[in-house]
Length: 150
Image 1 (cartoon, rainbow, N blue to C red):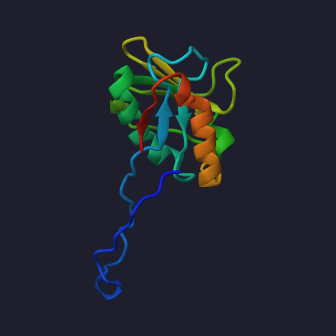
Image 2 (cartoon, rainbow, N blue to C red):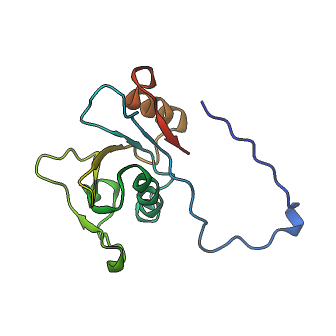
Image 3 (tube, rainbow, N blue to C red):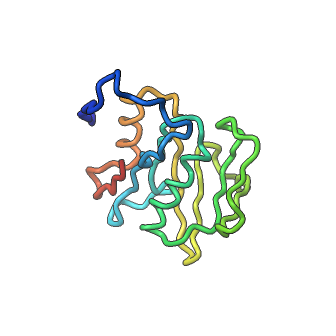
């Protein structure tokens, strides 16, 4: 389990109102190591909250380091309560529903270079300890190096 130390540098009386738009958080995901045993799942994404679309931008930026520029995302959006999905048209990313036969808990990210990732999505309301256990089980760091961004 990962523990984080949080230091409050502003006393309660000196705080201003919270920002109306929260700052983007580092995406919480694991990718299987490049030398890992082959699998149909390349990693796992555990969003911080139910605002999947806000978190999608940070996930795209992070996975682009591994597979290059993301051009298409396929997911069963209604499984996480998202009924309308849109990313700025200038990004050149096609957002679509699932491919035929695609499991509803997997998101597929395709890149311009032909690389692709299949990430299992852990529902954001999952207990953090349980979410971490699931992440580790999917990536199985004993069989290959894990690439962790958190």
